Amino acid sequence: MSLWAGAELKLDYAAFHFNEMRRALDPPRRSTHEIAQMSTGAVIDTGWHRRFYPHFDAFLSTSR
Image (cartoon, rainbow, N blue to C red):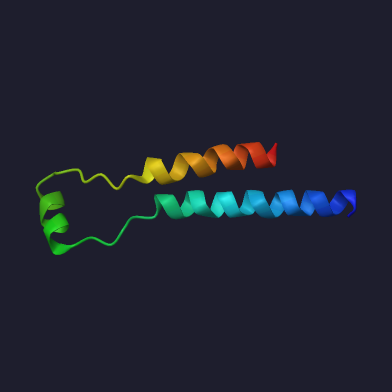
C-alpha cells in the first residue's frame, strides 16, 4: 500500500462524512398535521444536531 493510497482512503472517508452532514440538514417529509402546526408558528424539532455533529467531528478528524 503506497502513501497515496492512504491519502485517497482518507479523502473517501472525509467525503462520506461530509455527505452525511449534508443529509442531516435536509428537511424531513412533513405530515399534514405538522404543516398545520408550522402554519401557526410552531417550531418542530427535526433532531438534525444529533445526526449532524457526530459526522462533523469525524469529518474534522479525517480531514486533518
